[in-house]
Image (cartoon, rainbow, N blue to C red; front, side):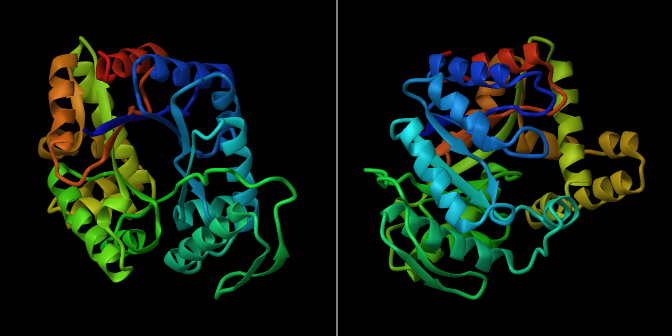
Length: 333
């Protein structure tokens, strides 16, 4: 049976309490894991701690902590601490993010993102083992680090993001899980093939890699409002968040994503929103009235190889619209 997770909203949330309350609501609705993105607002670790302390059974995860702004050793300490605070419910989501975030916001060289992610995962695993870390890599050279507390009795899984075929293949070789976004059900099938190929190269069983598909959802009685919020969200990500999402859609045959990106970059955001193709919306997102939105999400759950779908929300949705969608898409709805 496919798990149903939730990506908690972070944009314009008034307080940490409000985010923790979403996690509690998700737990009450039967969601399997509450994932917290870390963007450019509150730091993810502090909020994840609040979530862990105010929930009892739902898994909590970072989706994602980037592999540049924290060292691998610190990420290992963080994972050990959050596993302790959550009493074994933590899942560590990592990813390289992109040059817009890493270079412009954090002032660091982006470098080789795949290699850095691989080495970060290796080091985090060594830290979590409780043994002394001696690591000689291309990006990192560590000697003598060891946790000054008891390591977790059960190591949290380390799951990674990736958009392109090579990144996903690499996830299949070394990660405990992979998170995909901006993918249609058909597009996700292609990436699952990459996971399987990577697992074979790593002499692993592909079933060892948890595949999570993130889906933008908006379930409202006002179906047209749900459509427009979803359209605005898609235009923002394709147009304003680097080139990764544009490229992901191009790989899936949606050449018009280039036009959306160019319009947004030219400053014509209204046009960028207007030219988001109806086919992209219908194929990529789950929106409309509650019944219609649930049916669209179930297309992903029917894909062989997807272990979990993660409900996410349009960035323009207000608190009431987020609650409505979370409740409508909940496993126990």
